[in-house]
Length: 565
Image (cartoon, rainbow, N blue to C red; front, side):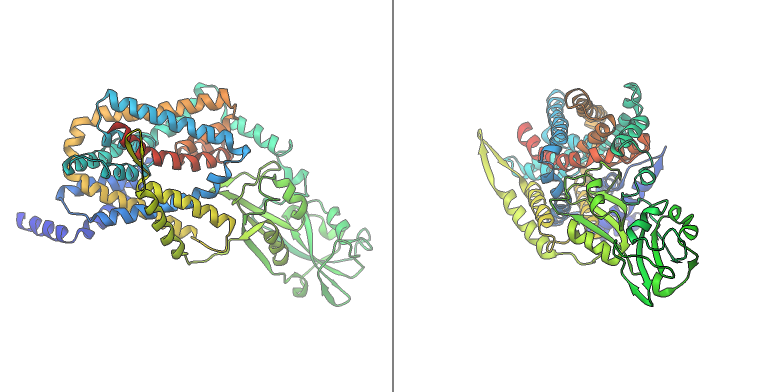
């Protein structure tokens, strides 16, 4: 038995990729296991698996860790870049202040706890990274440690402590924020569901069902019907297409008219005659009395054979960005239908007063020509494409790495962004450039997921495997103390953000709790707030704060090491 174990150990040490893949597989499996409705997530799962497998003392090439982290941090910057620079506008300043308050209180709390508990710089940086769920701070902290003028043994020890501290504090960092966002509204006697209802009414112009009350708006339903009728009704004969559309009980648009044997594209002023055939598109409610108003329903393929299209449109036009939905609806809502709006992967509620931000993605459905007309006006069509602009990705990582190598002396202390910080800045810039000139630099959502998720977890696996041999001793030394320190670091910045948002900038409670989860970059907590509010409105407060939180907290990894060293 001992011989078999030694043979397995030898194989793993000679082929470290086996252990890396095993750490990923076990970690992803652990991350999916739910206990009391909560799961660790892939990152924490991979780190725990890697720390255990690291007891085999497998040698991991440093280059693999550097490259995987570069892919991850580039993807983060690329994703949040448009929202980061867009948030600098006046309407986003409140959210920027929110993210700054949370981040600065987090940094001060981490430094204070580190000094009081006599934590070394690696432990303090790992605590910040885990307690505030910012995995990228591990990379910037490790990069900063590598630049310090200390012994190799000291560097190795601090690198280990970064990983161990992250593992100990990450669980409460996520679960604690979820609990905070569920408990605090109750303690403050805030009914998020009622507040969301009020805000929705306010943003909808006072109408809960605004499609019924305001048929000129986009239709929000995902399904659109297409039916054809032969004109026999006395009330419609001699009327124009626009007049007939207004006669229908719901939002209905004329897509085709067959007149005198010819199939025509209807113009608003086209006069409809007896015996014409007309194809209508719209919601089910709009067709309830259509046969009584227009005439009998027919099945004529020449009329109903309309080419429809569903397009994802990235908003770039300055005449649209920053405006509310009803402004766009007034111009194009008559002939097109809106399915959903997403902002940085989060669904945004659709109301009259929903403000459209640059790089929001609107999914629009309708006749092909009508939809493409809207897309041409509003921005850039995000057509499904499997290819990634790897030229841009490579150049961005090169430039970011070079930027990270720049060292600037400040008060006698060498300050550097490190490779992680440099590539993050590069990702921000290239993500923003992509939003300005969408003809280059495409990275599909699927590729972004690979860079972000696999890049991060491959990096975490390397970190855990390297730290594994010293992990047991580090946990025994600081485990319990570090856990409670991490819990404090999770809750204090969130409380500071809550008080600042409520009493200083006076955010609506629903948007406020969304902003807190974004500032702490805790998507799981955002989902908890959305459940409590029974609304997607918290996502509006989340996005800008998430963009800035990712950038600031990542840089804090470097700052902490230099302050604590």
